[in-house]
Length: 447
Image 1 (cartoon, rainbow, N blue to C red):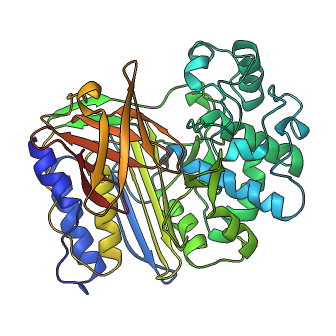
Image 2: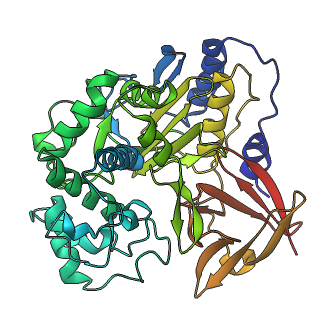
């Protein structure tokens, strides 16, 4: 097992000490160290009991501007938390039936057997953005309706029976944004701004324009920063779709979005809050993502989500028991091992504890997971078990009574499972897999 595996992944267990230390002091110590190591640029915001108790930027947003808590940046799939909440709000007001066909609300939606619930739960079988690369790279329209029409032309049938499988679906959430527009009679940004952003005090959040030339002001650029080497790793031009991504936040505004949830704000009624933290059900199995697009703790009182697009990685967390809200957005192509570890560290700090130091080594970044070697059945001391399947070179993670999840290689010999936000690192020396997520870290051994 490499240096990253030995140090960063061991850290993920968060052996904590000195609980009760000030939040700002511990956050500064953690983030200054990561800044010195050159592995984080971006901004971090922590709020408790309705007050921001820590906010700070690190590194550069572009060649001339420092990254600050009010730097607007790409937050990837965190847009899905807004889109899902908008749908559930309209459902609570009697305007949307989750079990109605999506084309009941948007006539251009090309798959009559797909329901709104299928879209929310990533179980619709729609194509991913790869199917539209030629449109994105050309001057063709890429708004939500244009992509839905193109989807019907390029993939006339869904990839599987809707509701039978999980397949992480960005286009599903673009379709949901179109549904919100048709049902509300408002543009998507006008609806979410009036219902969520203004009550939260989010004054610097917007849907990105399709073309860079139409950007309303300076924007953070995505980079790949490794030591002294800097490469551009930015988002793409001509992305006119939104709902699954392309809502740009500042880190401060993203924290304010979390504060709505942490503080039980009236903008999110109790019925919407309850529905949002219920696991989506796919083929009678509970998904790891809730209907509100959250990775959720067992009681639904603390949840988080992540977003990733090119060089940008974002994290947002809320805890309604402790009234904690945390957000960060980074723009330096954050390496996979540090993603869950940093999130867990910041949660620990917000809870009054001091995590151990994160030490990062990027030497194994290009390491690809050997799927054939990793495949097998695993069991942990706590009785948890799972299997990793090798199907023609594609890896799938299978837990009992849960939808199976496609695994993606993310470097460092790690496989990642969207839909559970789980990172798996195989240790051939003892036939074990280290399983890490924001909420948990444990080791399982091959049977």
